[in-house]
Amino acid sequence: MIQAIAFYLFAIVVIAAAAMTISARNPVHSVLWLILAFFNAAGLMVLMGAEFIAMLLVIVYVGAVAVLFLFVVMMLDIDFAEFRAGFVRYLPVGLALAVLLVVEIIFYGFAVWQTDSLQLARRVAPTPESVPNIQAIGDLLYTRYLFVFEGAGLVLLVAMIGAIVLTQRQRGGTRPQNIARQNARRPWEAIRKVQPPVGQGVEL
Amino acid sequence: MTAWFETWGMPYGWAWFVATIIGILVIALPLMLAVAMIIYADRKIWAAMALRRGPNVVGPLGLLQSFADGLKVFLQETIIPSAANKGLFLLAPIITFTVALIVWAVIPFQAGVVLANINVGLLYVLAASSLGVYGVIIAGWASNSKYPFFSALRAAAQMVSYEVSIGFVLISVVLWAGTFNLSGIVEAQQGLYGFVNGFAFNPLLFPMAVIFFISSLAETARTPFDLTEAESELVAGYQTEYSSMSFALYWLGEYANVLLMCTLNAVLFWGGYLPPFDWAPLYWVPGILWLFAKILFFFFVFSWVKATVPRYRYDQLMRLGWKIFLPVSLFWIFLVSGFLMLTRVGVPS
Image (cartoon, rainbow over all chains, first blue to last red; front, top):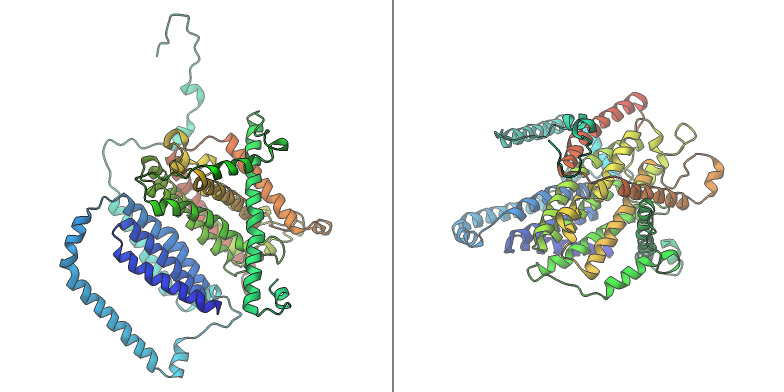
């Protein structure tokens, strides 16, 4: 019973938070609602027994991606009137996309409904109870899907290098810190002890 | 404990529920007391290193100082700045405080004594500690004030940076232990070379222990890395606009986090509830006392660092995180996994 209560709690919060994400006036509030939605989606995954995915969702999305999101959105200076002006113009495209997604979901629902038990058993191959799902995912990822996995890693690496190359520009006139030189500097190079007589300053 | 309630005739669900609630109280209430005493200890150690007396007026030896402070803030008025975003402003300290408490659910206090013995324990710790940054960011933004906002930006960048190297350090520990379960990690540390308990005694993992300790200083924003509340630059950082209980929640959350990081140091690298040496008479002392002794030792080191090390500059902080810790810990993962491949290959995990 506790599981059912938890499921409905998480599910309702996810939907409500998702609705608030798109309807909140302030973009920072939007991001915060989005974070709440992520967090509760992780809760749903725990209920399904996919605790590894749930933890990754929280660590990667809530802990890192959303922080950067928030970081950027907090510093934006957004004109809300301009936001509203674009709303009507993009409404048809948005509606078309929404209808497409709903139709897809319905088709998918029917597809699952109509499959017989054999097909279903082939599609979902539940891991045995005794195998923790980290181990199950690891076994699949590093044996059967090794090349796909490494390919994905390579794509990410290329994207990362691309982002660095695109954003890094050399500006003239900067004086970057030379850490090695700073560390190599010793007190006697920087400090001079003097005992100036009264009424006389120090000559630099 | 669930089983004990079941003997009273409760159905399993309710027995589990009641047992869990009691377990939470048994951890959280002593934790609050411990936080109060640890604040006092911090001030005493700090004072001793500065050749001062520290708090010595309230109660014998000043032992009740923290409670007096708590009473004081409780009686003060909660001031909410008129320009602040009220809901988020009040939510932020609650997030910090809650996140500081929820991680304790997976800490093993003794063999088998843990509230939630989940098999992704370490990931849970990482997930919950990555939530902690929201308390700071939301506070900085919702205060709608200059210094808290700067502080929030600094905190966000700092915590995300050091979480990366903490993650890699944890992976090398997990590789060695072969499990994400914290009790399993503690058990895996038993009998290294036949006489010591703790991964830190392993020369291959000792550098990771050092990196983890320094990163945990950065993660809790303790002194060499306390740029989020650098009082000479940012007044009091993200807490500037807070007063009364909302400020107290930050304070408690901060120290609960410090205690947590000390505990993680003890659990991951120094054998947790195991005695330091694998020698039978030492096991007569209950494991929880060994764990507390280790936590207190690390807390002393935290205070020691706070009293002696000057604050880093922000670029130095970022350089340490990204240019030193990240490459070293990444390289160490290859080293550790290579070593394990050489020595344990063919052994099923």
